[in-house]
Length: 232
Image (cartoon, rainbow, N blue to C red):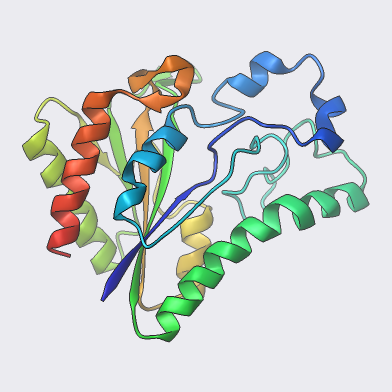
């Protein structure tokens, strides 16, 4: 049996009260793509009814990056990297570790009972980065060396294209599926019965100030996911 786990690491740009002084005058930065993934939380909520488990965070990634490994140089941002080690340890203890632990505990519990876990991590990407336009609507990220991930990704891409022919879907773009991240870390921990995917949607499709994605792309992803889950 396969269960769907849905996560959203960059669902908001909230700053915990203990650290607000670090972000004074940084409202614009917090609301930019550097502070969160606009539209991702709304999409996550729209797809959540398919999932057996779902976890999300609305704490800004500028406090600590939940989608980076503990020793990654960009785990902390320019605002937090130079904090004393004890403060950074507190941030990890209070905000990073609990999130990653609950995701791992969900996977542990189901794999232990012989079930397979399909994990989809929901993200969005800025349409232009460093002056380069990203000419795509949806990216599906996975590890090409893992056949089950590659098969699921291809089937989902086909379902999206069939239902919404105008959408530009690319595989392992705008990032590589094997780059450092939560799914990559979980693949190392769970060699079997774990299928890790990242869904990336262009922020051009956001509405209501980034609160959600457009109805058209949300409905397309909802229908296509339902279709591919039925045959997975």
